[in-house]
Image (tube, rainbow, N blue to C red; front, side):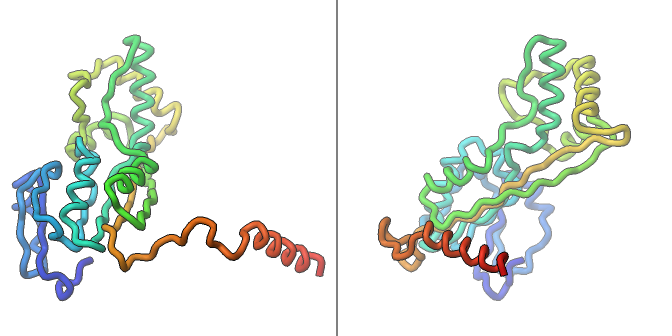
Length: 240
């Protein structure tokens, strides 16, 4: 939660003008709503102290380009903080549909939008020039009565696949078989699980005041010796 007393200006941005109009009014007096595409951020250089994003980056095509543009808009020692859906999201649904298509149609196509894996997120931030990077993962399991309920929920969330090469529709028999396989592999008689993986990240724009790693070879203590000393202490405690 941002403290209004610590914020001079606050910019809330979205690709959808309707969502901007429906946004909860900010408690920060100097708030500006900006109808912009996240892939075309055109703010001035060294403009923001903090850039926040939550749950929308999996829709960005040019993620490396976005990282570089965010880096440009941040002041030195500014921070980029956010979360996005990760590559293991809906792995149960993807697997069930692929197996059903392979069995009935002799091939399968993408039906879930591609997403970034956790190691890739760290590399993207590093390549864009961010320092002191931290990336972690949360997984949330939501249970649904049936695969069809899950797919209906995804459509209502606006999270249907956006890939250009996807099939226009799924065959009815493919959906029936996929639902059966989904329940057999992951669910039970009452429900099926749907995994949503969230990648949380933070990266800082370089600044001379930030801590830096010491030169390689400058260590005065050997980790091996340290481990041996700790092991010897533990053995002594056990013997006593």
